Image (tube, rainbow, N blue to C red; front, side, top):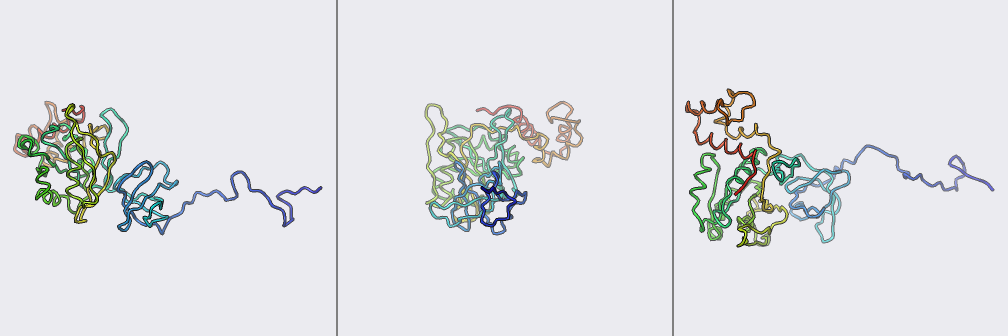
Length: 335
């Protein structure tokens, strides 16, 4: 009986491939020149919904992306079934370079950053004037996060029918932050147009405590078919219920911008933020900080900013605001 091996010259002999297969290993990866650009609008249990040429396409990450995360707001390249039909599934093969990244940590001791949204250029901090009451320290932390990410902050005060905004605005006016005050009734009328004007042409992320009215605000800004479910504030705890469980990007009613509704937060950790970068948001004070001692916290007896303000280069309220923002980096937010 004859025995054959790989060196046999018989052309009718089948040779089994090795355990690793017959395809040669290579470090080259496909370039996907025919990939189509998409915009990630939500992420849910490994499925990512993207907008591609006006169609909603469900996709998964390609294996070659490895552990690289994809978040709402990412610009991605997709291949596969891009029809948007039911049960169609595309693949995300590339994540384009991000223009901005809004991050937070669970608290100030947590070393792990969580990316909230990508490629936003504006952060709208939504705060209720009552039910639940405002949390200035949480607002301060969101402001620091916005400055660190290079986003323009916008303060939206809701439920003005329940409380006056004067006290809160007096606190934040020295920061020069744009703001708008509204209520549910106003959003049904001209109030929505005023907010929409501030959001037009931007990708705006909304962040705020649960129950402050973020989803109600979003529903007044987007087309009726895109509206989300809303909830109420718990009468026992005074806290809002989480009706938004995942971030979702929605087009404005006039299609001139995007608004990203994010789940309500109870904390906004700043462990990832370098305190030295916060002062960049205060150009009127940054010039005077050059004379500060090495590693100055800007809240110590020999801080040069005291003399800078005393010489009239900046408003004292601006220095107070800077120190308040820096102080939030080293303590947990509270009511």
